[in-house]
Length: 102
Image 1 (cartoon, rainbow, N blue to C red):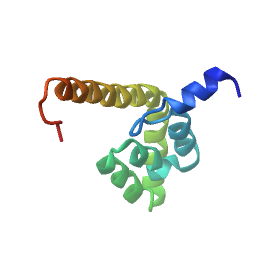
Image 2: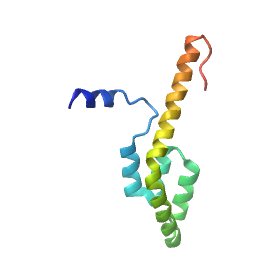
Image 3: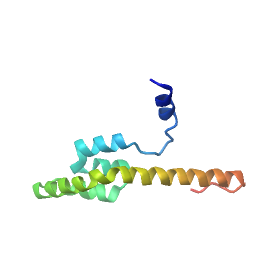
Image 4: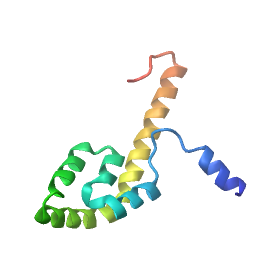
């Protein structure tokens, strides 16, 4: 492994999501909403899971997955940016002596 790859693996903070994991979940378990559970969208993931029980619902979730696949990188980026912003606010609060946001 190169130093750059080791640095990237070591600097992934807790709570961030990886695009590769989301894509693999979407490709293999997408109609069942696994990628949405991974992203923390529990409501829409539960809806996909309930719809996937029927044949008609499975076709609906397959179309839903085709819409989600190109949107996954933006969903991951938004999630990780929100976590980074939250951490920056926590660091700023701690620097000035304020309690952390919960």
